Amino acid sequence: MKFIKKIREKILKKSPYEMHKLMELPHTSAWTQFESRSESLNAKKLVKLWRLSELSGDEFMEMIAKEVESKSQ
Image 1 (cartoon, rainbow, N blue to C red):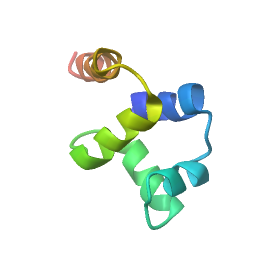
Image 2 (tube, rainbow, N blue to C red):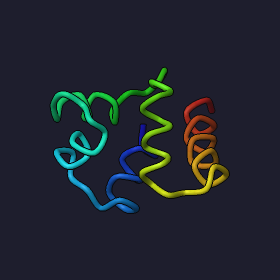
Image 3 (cartoon, rainbow, N blue to C red):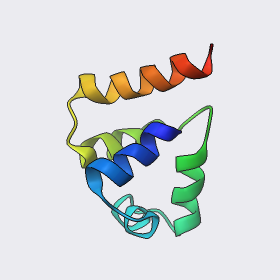
Image 4 (tube, rainbow, N blue to C red):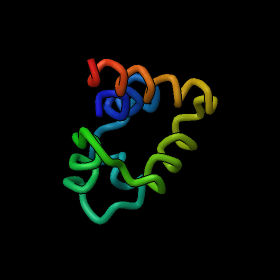
C-alpha cells in the first residue's frame, strides 16, 4: 500500500533492504511484497512498522484510512 512506502521513504528514510533488516524479514523481497500488497495486511507487521515510524496511532490510522477510502471510490 502506498502509505507503507510513504512511511519508509519520507519518515524512516530507509531502503527496502534496510527495512527488511529492521522488520526482521527473511529477505528483501518479503519487504517488497508487504509494501506492494493492496488488500489484507499482516497485523503483526503493521504494528511493527507503526512503532518504527514513531507516528502517533491517530496519524498512522489516518494514513491507512485515506488510502482505503481513495481505493474504494
